[in-house]
Length: 111
Length: 112
Image (cartoon, rainbow over all chains, first blue to last red; front, side):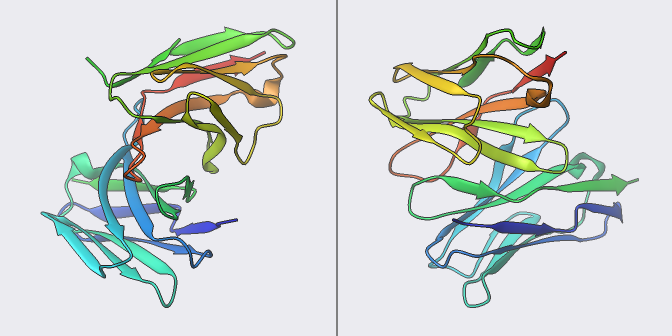
């Protein structure tokens, strides 16, 4: 089955800096890669996703890049703000089936 | 109102007790999932259902069972709870034509 590895497990940045979280996957059949943000006491919420027919996708301060050859994808957050502090999960899936999640990255943005 | 609801939100039970966690959705999605979250282990899939008559085991189904009572309802049961089932449980839904999953607020379960 699919295996998703996520790094780093914790990330501390100063407000205004950029943050990068990286994931690798093992199954070459995977073609859907969502990123979720989980705030304390809440369920994960989708923040951005990418499908394998594109290499990069942006949404304001958030971007995701995908390298299918190397089987890795990354989340980039620019101009970080304290409200970006949360746990972030990457995931990978094939078609519209199940998702396999990484173990999460706790991002702390200090003012 | 929330699209995906879970009841109860918090539950304390004792070893050996049977417990049921419930999930309801108003998104009209056909697919529903149960996950378990433990610190440092991420989200692990317990069971999933692609329609009312379809039930599939996930990565960690031992000790759990599920019932899909209707398109909008999917319940998770622990027949005889044990302490290592203490965790945060999430229900999620998705549409058959898209991979995006939408999560409920979670149920925090403590087994003493």
